[in-house]
Length: 226
Image (cartoon, rainbow, N blue to C red):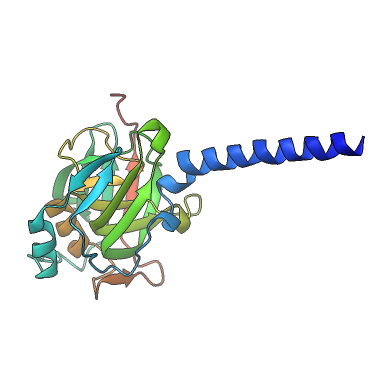
């Protein structure tokens, strides 16, 4: 009887281990801060990554422009309330100063993991971040160093450790269609403009909001099935 009990316990632990592994590879790691292995905001000396199991190159101009300081757009009117709206239906991002739209860009939201809807605030910004997640068995694995102009956001339901963000993108050019694992993909030049326009004001390679000063982000709608 004791042997049977031990055997059943081992079987239970094995089943639990498979479940936890599958959960982690399918969900948790897709947008987790723990998957962003470099949160210093500094550039990694590498020129390639992996997206959907395939090797992708990092265009040299991405690093060259950012490391050189790039072209920083004007911060805009600092006397009015800023907010960002992401329309999942149309796959577009709008930046507002008061009621005026000052920027309008196509984006790519979650395809392999849904982009959560709601009202959020930016809590940190990084010039470069390594992002890793997905599931190798399902050919959704990605390991992307030097993701540029990352703006992490959160609310009470989607906590900071979930790692959702707006960010630049070098591994695809299919904007206007869902292409991400939950984050909001943007063309790098568009992400750069939003990065320097939004709050908190950028300091160094990494910037953190204080006292809820980060720009409000409202995500709504439903991404088209493609």
